[in-house]
Amino acid sequence: MGTISKSFTFSTGATITAAEHNTNFDTLYNLVNGQIDNDNIKASAAIANSKLANPNSYFTIPLNSDGQHAATVDPLFTFQMPFAATLVEVSACARDLDVAGTNTYTVDLEEAGTTVLSSAISLVADNTVVVGTVSDATIADNAKMEVVLTLAGNSTPTVDDITVLLTFKVGHVA
Image 1 (tube, rainbow, N blue to C red):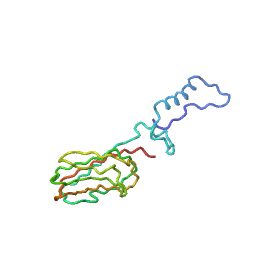
Image 2: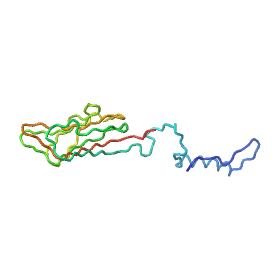
Image 3: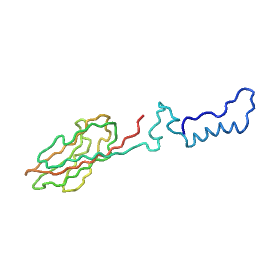
Image 4: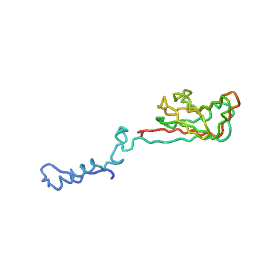
């Protein structure tokens, strides 16, 4: 709608008509009832996220490691958060696991070297998505994030083609 201007300005002693008065009043009435836009809000307004029509945006980061791993990889992936966010979900899957003997495979997500999951995600079968339990959902702006793949067992554990999906929620910021 753009910046609103007053249609009529009255001076002392002037006769005010109902139409002029109503025009000024209706301009404000219409603005407050649905026509406020970015042009009508000053930059320092500091409006709370809960007052915005869509205060949260969700995004998913897919991390893929193609190829075979036969040993722990710490870190498998590293990235820096571009802004503060809430971690909503972490899931992992591998195309192929060698499940002979007591081989185990876990995927963990760390923020600044500390896990954000209740426990590492245990991969147990080929092509099976496993969702982790988030214990620390608050991720700081510019946080160093690392995904750690741990392999263990009594035979040589191998894992092929790992995918990790991280889903975050970010609120609008001023």
